[in-house]
Length: 322
Image 1 (cartoon, helix red, strand yellow):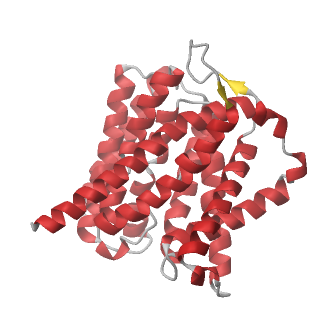
Image 2 (cartoon, helix red, strand yellow):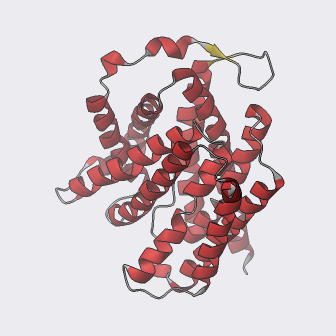
Image 3 (cartoon, one colour):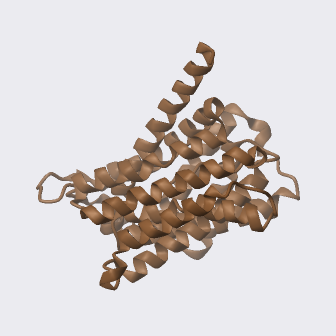
C-alpha cells in the first residue's frame, strides 16, 4: 500500500477517533443536563436549534449554493428531519435518562444490522451470509446486557426508548442516503436541523422554555462536591458534542470512505461507557460487559458483510449525533 494511502487512512482514523471521543463524552454531559432540566424534549429542542444556528454559519461561509432547495428535496428533508434527527435524539435522551448510557448506545448501534437485512430482503440485493452470524451475536449480546434470565434488570421504558431510537436511526440512515445524492453532508444536516428546529418550535413554543433551569450549577461527578455551571455543559453538548464531531466525521469520511467510518463509529459506545462509569458511576457487571462486546462484534461482522458485497450503498449517511 502506498505511503500516501496509509497516511490518509491514519489521518481519517484519528479524525474519527476524535469525533467518537467527543460524542462519547457527550452522552454523560447530556445525561447531567437531562437530570437538571428534567425534560428530554426541551433538551433536544435546545441542542437541535443551537446546532442549526452554528451550522447555517458554516454553510454560509463555505458553500452558499447549498441554501438552494428544489421542490423534490423538501418532502425528503422534512421526513429526514422528523423521522430521523428529531425522533432519534429525543428517544436517545429519553432512554439515557432511564438506563445506563453505554447500554442505550449499544442498542442504538445495532441499527446497521437491520439496514443490511433491509438491503437483503427489501432491495433484494446479495450480502454475505455472515450477516446472520452478526445478527445472532448482537441479539445474544443484548440478552446478556439486559439479563433476561432475571426478568430484565433494566427499566422497561428506557429499553423501549432505546429501541425506538434504533428504529429512528434506521430511517436516519436510509433517508440520509437518499437525500445525500443531491447535496453534501454538511448542508444536509443543516437542513435537517432546520426542519427539526421548526418542529420543536411549533410543538414547544420558545416563550414557555424553562430558561431559569439553565442558570443553575450541577455536580457532574458522583460522590463529589465539585460544581459546574450548567451553561458550560450545554455549550459542550452543542459545540463539542454536536457541531465539532460532525465536521470531524465529514473530514474522516473523505479519507476512509463511508464504510470505514461506519466501522470506526463503534468506538463511541465504549468511550461513552468508560466516561459514564468514571463520572456518573454507571457500571456494568462482567456478564453485561461480555454481552456488550458480543453486540459490537455482531455489528462489525454485519457491516463487513455489507461492505464486502455492496459498495454501491456506501453512501448511507454515517453521521449520528448521539
